Length: 461
Image (cartoon, rainbow, N blue to C red):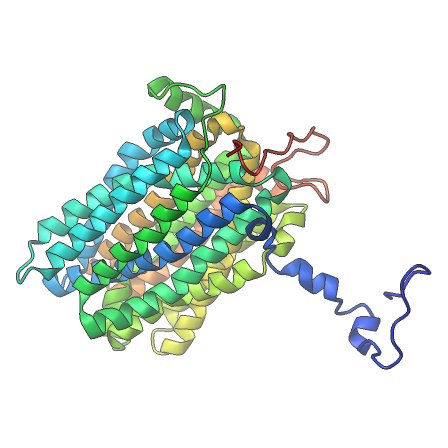
């Protein structure tokens, strides 16, 4: 029973509480605890600026994510062409991600973000230039995709490792969750808008829209305070990269988060098959292709909006394992329900919701377990896993689809994801046994002294 204390103001007799609230079954504070905490957006100016800029430019990037595979499909009518795109994007990630993290730890992260955003805008302009050509060379799209993936391999760890410097420690978990909320917002709107834009105006104008949205992210980076390197930062080089790798290997719970995500993305992500599924299996056209891309993001959006509880999770490792199991089961069901497009979309939405819960908890564990002078390098490993896993998954799904058809490719991927999860949990039992005291953020061992809060604005203006 939720009865008022003696010091509580009396409730107006004209507005009695609903019976469910009186019985403690549905209390407003419990509902608020489920919703994502927007305090970092309201209270931390620099985080808010970066968040808003990413929100706008992210919409454009999602349009490009839709437009590029469609252009390759139209030029080749071969799923292996999209699988090759995944390999082309994977190579620069493998080459540049770890080095990019070392650079992010050694330089002003604000300046580095400005450089990466300008360069990414230039790659989108190159995509638009190619698409406007009457007979664009196929190799040109692969070259630009290679360059863009390499720049993104530097941009992502830089942006992720900057977040703990833009918010105090007590709001870091909320900042990670709200960051995912913005990403999922554009991931829902972007594919739908992108599919419609491609159908009405063509892929060239879709790429041009992406270029225009980069003005917001560049302006946001210009408006935030500098983010200078930690006084104990190491100069970029092989030694710095090795130091980050040694740290990640020494923290088994961090290593476990990498392994469990790699398994889920390699075997359970069939996005490279979406063009083929939409146009030849479901027969729903480019608009339906946009819906296939948007469905996981819609589920992830709902999941992101309900991440308030993650900051109080006592056993976040178990929550990660359950979420990945839900992801694999939903992808398997998606492959089994190709006769019903609405049910297939529902399965993708459930998968997206499970994935974002896992992502928020994994990112918070990694960031809070890692000291600032190593965050760029450790987050570069995180980026390497998060971005290379789906691309390897795209290639794997495309090869299986070419040999056995897209439906069997999706089903086998979901089943292998579940089998891989069992193997990861056996190899890293720390994932299930990892526990934090109630009220402490994930990643802080019970009884360990907390770090002093990092100022929201690193330097006075």
